[in-house]
Image (cartoon, rainbow, N blue to C red; front, top):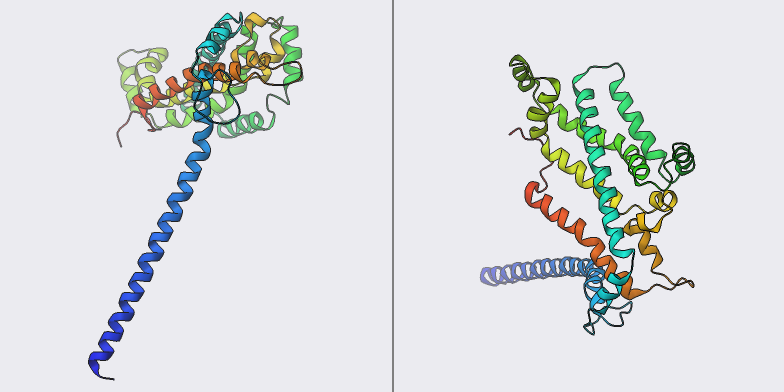
Length: 293
């Protein structure tokens, strides 16, 4: 075999190896994108059903082109509690979010600035207990407490209980944002005669605004989908939130009314989606304070 033949053989082997490598790369990319498409389809199909079923005269459990109608919305509007329950959800979510934001911000600022013995241990214990003793496990003593305070069938009682359950986690999260705020800014404001509340309002709050937005969105989303606490504490149907009223769209035999459930679910999800889009456009996913690094 001549030198030319050897070079040709080596060149052919190299080209074959490159072709095999390229084919493997193409197959690997094709498999990866196929998996991603299947994953997207898995999560997209329920959303497509939610968008199509409310406008279908006879929706089923499968995704199909709807037989277009607006009758489902008319039936829902005729329900005396459906639209009112959305307003009740706004009251519960807004009240709980406001109290959680206020108390957690003040507590996180105090814990961040005041050096107390065992401060960090206290935070971890509160967070641990709030994770272990969930709302379901503590529902009996919470119900007894609400009964003793005459807060049964009171939206204020639901707001207070939900706020107390979320405060440990909110304080723990906000403390990291407070720790990132320079103390020198506050000392400068204190030299010019600013009171502690003025310092918090005009110095600290603007710097930790992304953290406050995070807590606000988290607390509102938690309350918006909460079923157990309002279901047990509220007795009047006109005070029930949307998560509880949706439970009534089932027959006595347990069969779901898909037309009403899908239509109500679409309306029920819109406020949370709009809130997410607003916060995302305002802050994005920048989970840090207002100090440039």
